[in-house]
Length: 226
Image (cartoon, rainbow, N blue to C red; front, side, top):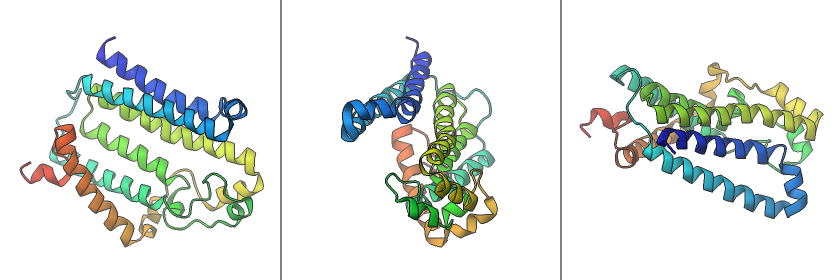
């Protein structure tokens, strides 16, 4: 199989497996395997297909199809990546969408921090991370993989809303009324200084690793002679 075709197949398997096991196949798999068995199979398939994505990504074409990744583009991509990290960090506390959250806790939830921006800060963080890579280095492998991850995040968020509405009814409807699917950028200040500070520190670390793992100096390191 050609490298790019293999990468496309790997991403289809990874994204398709997530959607299939999270929605139409979840109930029959749980009945057959039990909760722990389902989680084990889900994890195994996810890690296996993600490993395939990683291997195929390393073999696929790397040259950008357009653009030269100039300084302005890198600045925009860097700011988007910091935003993505801040949303990811903010999503780790106060999320009523976590499995096994009591219905009464969902109904009483109030949107603060990252959840005042969007009820899916983690998913939007992943999508924004994907966008930052597409604009700064639009190679075939980046377009395929980042595009797949963006679809997984944003369509997955929509499907999660539908599933939660069916499971939790009015409790979830109340939470949806507190929040929005689309990010409210005017609420970004509500993340708090600590979330932004942690995001910037992690950004420096991740972009430093990018030099050694990706072979490209990203973020501030690009202007530091690395």
